[in-house]
Image 1 (tube, rainbow over the protein chains, first blue to last red):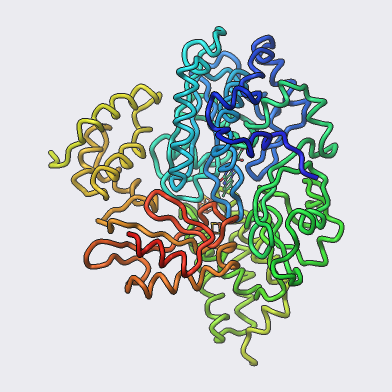
Image 2: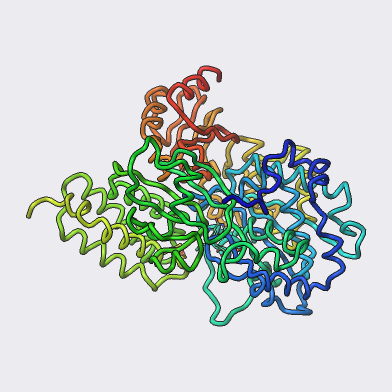
Length: 416
Length: 157
Ligand SMILES: Cc1cc2nc3c(=O)[nH]c(=O)nc-3n(C[C@H](O)[C@H](O)[C@H](O)COP(=O)(O)O)c2cc1C
Ligand code: SF4
Ligand code: FES
């Protein structure tokens, strides 16, 4: 089941060091890359069908094509290493075990979009990983893979690692850019039409770490080789995660289209302690929860999860066994959302806190059925009247927990 | 004028950083980090210093610094322990770890011991869900926590 494209070097000793990385294909795409024009690179990535791995699954090549040609301000690539979605811990593996793959991917991608500067925005807690990246970047400069002439070609590129400081919302790309511009991490209003992002007025692409790390393989082996894995609509592979009640938690690279149940059983080793599965969140806490009986024919790809009323998200699965009390699980997530709302929009700032408080009341045994009506009202308020998608997704999550595990939730109510 | 000053090393770092961004406003977070590493926390005085360097007001810097939970706006203990309270860790027994830490250190979350040795807080998902329950101790992560493991770590500090 496991395929190693992005994770190929993860098990090699000292794979983070340039001398070792060079023996294992790193920077081997550059010859091909610079023989192509930037547009040809973008086309190759478009044809590969590579989709963003930061949670949204947007087609990467299409996004790159939005970059204007001959803009009067410089262009930028910003790599999203904020990785704060609960249940997600994949980008960190790339930065730990193969930082040179990320650097190689940044060279590929920056060249395609015409950027000479790239920033890696890494969550503040990842001190070890920021250090590791900086060491790798330093090695790459010394060896001439970064700087005035990348690998001797007529192309200049600088990479800077920029540390965040503890704010989940800075993973949202426009909030990330605000933060990179030295401000509070407040998401920006979305433009009406499709356009690139902007960093100090310069056109900018924001891509997830894993997305960028997937590019060298495509350039090296061609789009068809990438498409040989996965499905028509979800080509290639993804670093899937398992955490919670599972025997073998961890990160595993799998082709899209792999059967979820097989992954849980054959790779995950089944639910911890031989217990029964109760529920599963497929890709980070912002995806709709699934009941055990819903996962029977789910395959790990965008279309299958959509068909089953959830989403693939970041691929970080959270597994819950039969003893999990769902109202408590939901309360835990609402403490998170309450804490992490950036506070710009009143419905979001107030709504998340409100739901959290009502859940506390219900869990303490003092709630009534009416309290659920209040939660649903709050959800309506959260849905659709805010600057970013944080609030609407919180509303959907609340709905999915309460409706799917109705009996458990209503068992909390006082008899009235 | 502020009393606070960057160390010589940080002054050099500041000049290096200036070259790396199209606009020096981007230096806000890096400078706040530099202050925090130098002093352990970020005083109002240091904010005035940063504001001066970046050509903005101390109030702006204050408003930005307070948005980010990792910036300490008051002194913290020598060892800053932050335990994850989010779902995967909870499913793997973080409750027990959290209770144990509070009992053993004799403080609640958000507090610092009188001798300024330990600060204890709860944080949201650290991105270490595969090694749940997890915490960070200053700049390092510790995962697969058990009560015994915590005792061993604390005994050695
Ligand atoms: C609330 C919120 C949090 C997000 N957090 C992250 C994150 O931590 N890492 C990430 O790569 N993308 C995150 N995203 C998605 C980004 O906005 C953006 O779509 C992504 O970085 C684009 O890269 P990709 O197309 O390569 O996935 C988040 C989005 C939202 C709405
Ligand atoms: S929806 Fe919430 S997180 Fe998004 S901008 Fe509004 S307040 Fe901030
Ligand atoms: S839930 Fe604790 S590290 Fe992710």
